[in-house]
Image (cartoon, rainbow, N blue to C red; front, side):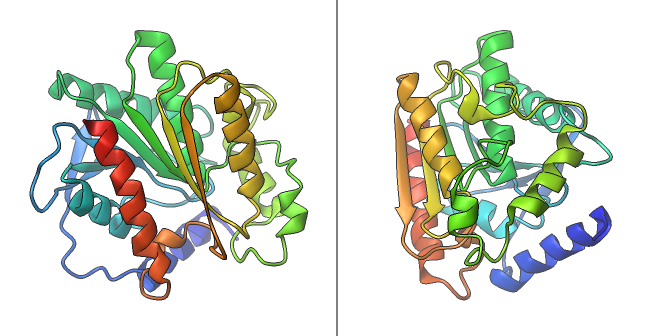
Length: 274
């Protein structure tokens, strides 16, 4: 499929899986980076959540992930800012990281004294981690916490779980993901620690919370990221949800564990914002 077809598909899958009535959000700009702000029903947290959507680096948007963002805003009492970063192949690495980093800096200027937490799924988890590392390295800015769902952590796609769960995973295959990663990276090396978080020194990062399905091909990436965090003495919590698929949070119409997982994720984010 062309990138345009992939984008339509991702938007459609999101609408199929989530109840979208009553979701309010405002389109905004953060230093020129397009984003959407999802307000909490009652604001009780002092800082914002920055959400980085997935979509294999080539698709996805604040609209495709509006159920997840709205649910997190309601459950945390914090505004959620979903960043519409530039997509590959038109805008390869590091454009997405540039956009998310710049948006976080813009929010940091308006939330002096308050923490900022990051959340993201799949490819959005990769981008969130790389943005957090860059912020710490370049400006000393420290994120208060990072919550991830099924992150892509090793862009070499070498985990044995690609074979182990390839037949069961309805969304991701090694072949398709490697093609998407190639469009994202273009000339960058997937073995570069600045590209693959599982290969990086994560010591600059705050506590990390990860949820992953027990039968998805990216389970191995989560376990590799957990090892990297432990090696760097970064607090990391991994929750493996039995029988769940890739980013099951987007399918509350069909999976009761969708909202349960979002509540678990929200608890971590609430604590991090304190």
